[in-house]
Structures are given as structure tokens and as C-alpha cells.
Length: 141
Image (cartoon, rainbow, N blue to C red):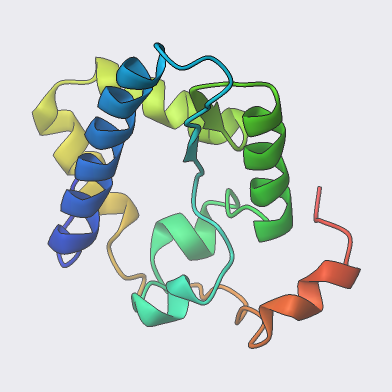
């Protein structure tokens, strides 16, 4: 997916995905060495604030923002199981599949809508300043 104002972020994601897939192919020759690619959906971290995404539909109104602890646990479990690719939730898996099936023009339109500011209509709760504080909290389900 690509969206307005996040060109470097999305270009980096595309690069890392291609690099990880190529690396996984090369590592097949080395049993016991695992490269796991974690594909989370929107995650409630300080990145939201740093990317000025507090009032976007994806973060504030969709209800699909994931807990960082649950995302990390999904990645760790996938790594332990030797998986090449791990989605942190059914929502991130479905979104990825839908975006791969949709024509590029539809992908860009959806990205424009989900990343558009809501101009005060909704705003996501501020993430924890100290991410270590989450270690003692149970993930939201």
C-alpha cells in the first residue's frame, strides 16, 4: 500500500518485504536458521504520534489498532514455529490479501481514505510514553 505523506515509510516497507522474502529463499540451504517477517496492522505505539496519524481513519475510527504486546507475541510465536511470514491478527491478514487482489487504483483510493485526517471527528488515545509500562498490562482483546 502507498499513501500520501508517507512515501518513505511505504517504500521502506516494500523494500523490507522483498529483502525478507529473498533472504528466506537463500536461508533454505541452512536448516535451523529462520527469517520471520512480521506483518502487523496498525499498532498502538508512539509511531502514531510521530507520523501525525492520530486523527486518521485507520488509527482513530477503524477500531483495528492492535496492542504492541500482542503484536510482539504473534511475531515471537511465529519465529519459534519457524514461519517465514506472520500476520499479527486476522485483520492484518485480511487487509494484506484484499490489497493484493485489488487493482492498484483501488489500493491507492483505499489508502487515501484510510490515511486521510478526520479533522477533529475522532482521535486515537495517546500511546504510552514509556512503552515498558505495557509489560505489566494485559493486551486489549
